[in-house]
Amino acid sequence: MVVVMQAEQQERPKIYIGACGIGHGHIRRMLYFAREVRNFARILFSTYGDGIPPLRREGMRFVECPPIELEYGGPQIKIEPRLFLAKIPQKLFRFFLQILWEIRHIKMFRPDLVISDTRLSTIVAARILGVPSILVADQLHIIIPSRDEKLLPRWKLLLKRFAEQVIAIIMLKLWSLSNKIVIPDLPPPYDLSRDIHKFALRYIRRKLAFIGPMLSRRIRLSKVDNKDFLREKYDVSKNKVLVYILISGARYERALMIRAIKRLLQSKRSLDDMLEFIISLGNPKGTLRRRIGKNFQIWSWIPDNLEVIAISDVAVIMAGPMTMYEVLFFGKPIIAIPFPQHTQKEANACMLEELGVGRVLRIDDFNYDEISKQALELVKSAPTSKLEKIRKLIELFDGVEKLTALVRDMLKANVGQESRKVNAGDK
Image 1 (spheres, one colour):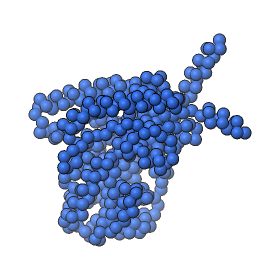
Image 2: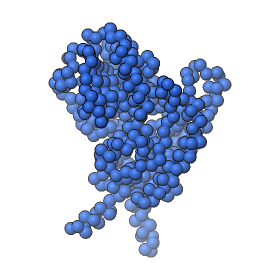
Image 3: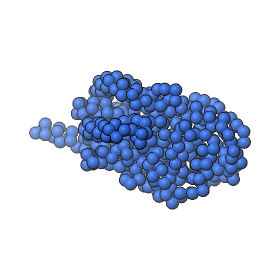
Image 4: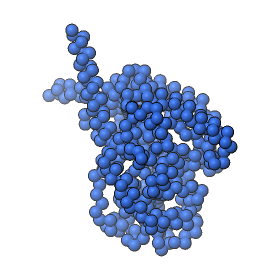
């Protein structure tokens, strides 16, 4: 019996997952996928930074690779274009270190398939070693961070766009080293990440597939029947507009939002009787739960985030694609506050506004009166038909399910190729 079990263990395919470690979105969607496939495959993760704690909590096997971080600077905590460009040589060095690291660990693990979530080094290493690979990414080219484009001289704007196209072509050539590229987004025209993969649609469309948002199985199966009970549970009045402010993202994004929350609490509160706020600081290690005045609750961490999203009227988030789709799954309008000059999140936030299901608010305008005004306008305008359409599309396009099906097909194809090689050798 033990021998049979060992044989079955050895026959299980191996999947190596290289996930970006900036923020929690990349590792979260890869964990949702890993939960679906770990019953038939052995998994090894490679990540860094924010990607490490969730893997530890989940008990997943992983290796920690050299990090590559975004640069930020200045008293406002924002991405500085000059600092970003000045650090390119250092980032290239780190990138080559990552490739060597990935080659070493892919060789040791000997996977049947490699999956990269926005990690170019993982794709390059897999190609060098001849291992089939899948790229999961919603950002396939870089938009160079800059101040307001309307204020740029014409020659600088043309130079910026030319540089972005050149970088996009180079990046797409490298991304194309993978066997398949999947975008965890809704298909056009409802894709929130349109501005950061539009070049890909032009140059490598044959390799691309839109698989839909990669949400957890728990979200997709959730049903919130008794909202009155949940409002009572979270001590929220039934007749008030509930605004849920959720802090997430990378370390420097969370730091910026905590500063903004302090400003919010200190600013004039002229509409106390109309709104109530629940604020999650996004710190799972914290224990804070405090009520400030009549209409503010501050939590370090909310154990069941989905319950609060479900009973909220408006969600205030930092335009990360995972959080955006979780909120939209529950049919809630969004006030998006993208990190200054974080071009991916700025593009996501603008698409929300274009689709008519949210508003964009600059972090400098984050105060009580402005949040209240935007929230009440969203509730009053009630874009329910647009929200319902997107919610149904999210239900229809299950990214985790589609990626799992693709992985099964590729693993079967690999087994078929190996069998043909063995048969050819026997002859």
